[in-house]
Every structure is written in structure tokens, then in C-alpha cells.
Length: 218
Image 1 (spheres, rainbow, N blue to C red):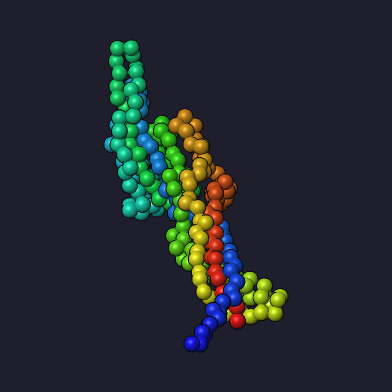
Image 2 (image 1 turned 135 degrees about the vertical axis):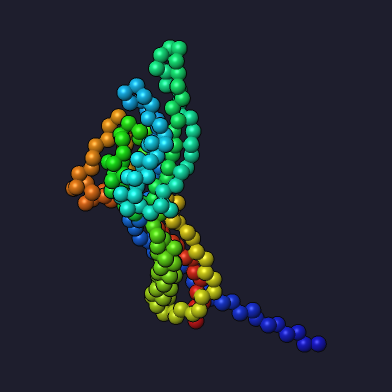
């Protein structure tokens, strides 16, 4: 009987990580505007009138109808005019999608300051964010191949085909960031110089992708 032993061939390989990143200025910003009824000359200004005023301001700012939606309607709080008399002041919140913060300034400058209970940023993104992510993933895997190539050349080896590829998405979910602290009792018209720099103080979206790749060594 002849015993035959077959040697197991072990593939030499190298594992590297490629990284690509970029920062982009958001062009899809979602503002929440809350309107509240208020007293004027001892008469309550109705929510219907406030909403009509807001609709006109949104249209004048060139914001499309589909980018202006109602979020919530509620009785916000009880405001006591006298000890024995109380009246419910209703409120309504809206989501307005704009391409730049100066657009919301145009809206607020054309409605009654007393009607604005609060303004804040709900979310922001970019219309081409999926395209940017794809571009970064391609750049990351190319970076991994470049790294593996020069590391192997340093020891006199050559890179082979890819054995394994895995990606790591380090792109954070955009979080609401205040653009300007609007208050009912005081917000001023924004100057032209501020409008020219509408992205000042607004956080950019940072995208970063890593690709872990294992290549064969020839």
C-alpha cells in the first residue's frame, strides 16, 4: 500500500482598508414653523387668518406647494386674561422645505412676528446625496487597491485579484442644527449681507466611507 500525501496550498493574501470622505452644503433643509393665535386690540387673531398669511408668504418666497405641509394642530396653552376668564389659544405647526436658510427669512419677514411661536430645523440633507455616496465608495475601493499595490511592491510582490470586499458606512444621519434663534418677541429682518452668506453657521454634511478589501498575492 502506498500512502500519498497532498500538500495543501495556502493562498498568500493582503488585507487593507481604503477611505474616502467629503463635506457637502445641504440643499434640502426642513424647517418647522409653529404659529399660535394671539391677542390684538383685545381680539384674538384666528389661526385661519395666520395660516392664510403664511401661505401667501411661502408663495411669495417661491417655495413650491409640495414643499409646504402641515405637521400638527393643537391647543397649545391656556392664557389667563383675568382670574375668572381663560381662553384656549390654538397652534399649528408646518414643515417648510427650502434650498437655503435665507428662504425661511423671506417667509418670516412677511408674517406677523406675534404669530410665530417657534422656528427650528427638523432635518437637512442633499438632493444628490445618493450619488455622492456611490462616488465615495468607488474612491474608497480604489484607495484600498492603491494601498495594497504599493505595500506589496515594497517587498517585491505583486497584487492579485480581490478575494473579499466589505464596506463600512460612517456617514452620520444629519441632525437638526439651529440656523438662527428665532423668538416671538424679537426677530429682526436679515440684512442683504447675511443673505449673501446664508450657509454661515450651518453645519455641513460630512460623508465618509471605508472599504475593507482582501487581495490575493501573486
